[in-house]
Length: 101
Image (tube, rainbow, N blue to C red):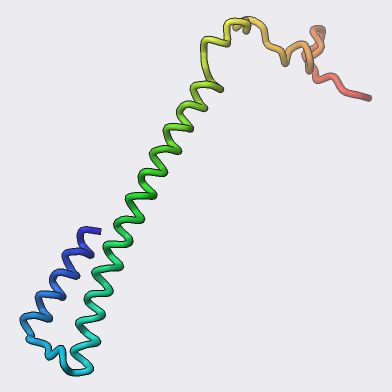
């Protein structure tokens, strides 16, 4: 964004150095275009700031949600030696998948 602002400033300097006649139709158009470009860059910068602030808020909310969902303190009821899938899908005798044959 700073690059665009620098380029707009450069164009303004060129327009002043070229002593563009602002009374002519072409001069009015060029000066107005440069002004509009400057305003567009300012507006884009302001919008980018708002988006960055919004993304920061979303990131904070997501962090809070992750802490709530993935909180390790609530995992005390799980036993690391017990695998729920062993009892559901495998027969203890032959370790094959049980099916509805």
